[in-house]
Length: 298
Image 1 (spheres, rainbow, N blue to C red):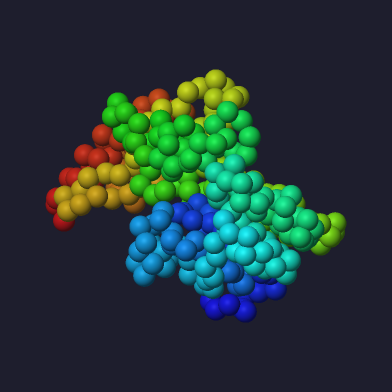
Image 2: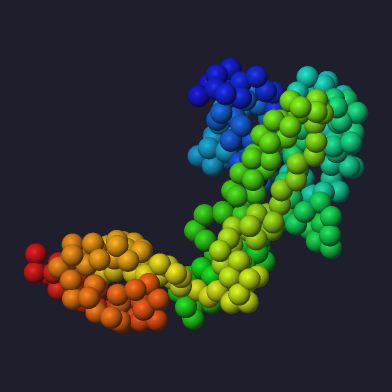
């Protein structure tokens, strides 16, 4: 997609972000056609090691234009404010105190353009005891609880294989920006949208969090097993692995027919979801043995 096309083509975005969470949010808008101007510091984006033409930088900053400004200098700040006066959105992911020192906080830019939608992405939120701490994806994964339910039982906390805290904080920020733009059509005023790595990870716990808040059940690590839908997992075959998700009684019975194991569907130990949950290990072993035997024969 090129600038000037797409559903967001009428919006101008000023991108003050760096590293990953912020650029992810702005990338969403750029991919949908927004006119994005990425403001770069004279020293470049140190968060990505200066690899401007490398895959990571190009992936995060595609579909954007670029302008270098020294926001610590009055002249650079003046140029930014002229841009903001004509913009719809500003996105930043500084530590919360930095934007105030630079004079690019929401209230300062709102004075220039009351319609501006201003989005902030931080590690731990815009207030609270950890407010001024820098945020890192792996730390947010751990503090948010995600690492405690990732990996095989008994192996200890395990990070997810993608920077999921950065990515989800950015996606949530992009969603908030779009909602604020919709609201602006009614009120005529912008607002301050806030997202954080820690908040995003707590949100991503989803039903595991609900199991604690409602049932006081502490979810644990399940590896490739699904915590509630059984059988779901990765099973070894004679020539590799097969990924199975046979959730629900009807799909489970159809799965059993497909692998020639009607006896497993009829067995009272596995006939219902509750029974399969109580006898998960026995069912997985039976399925694994059958699959290995069949693939060896083939």
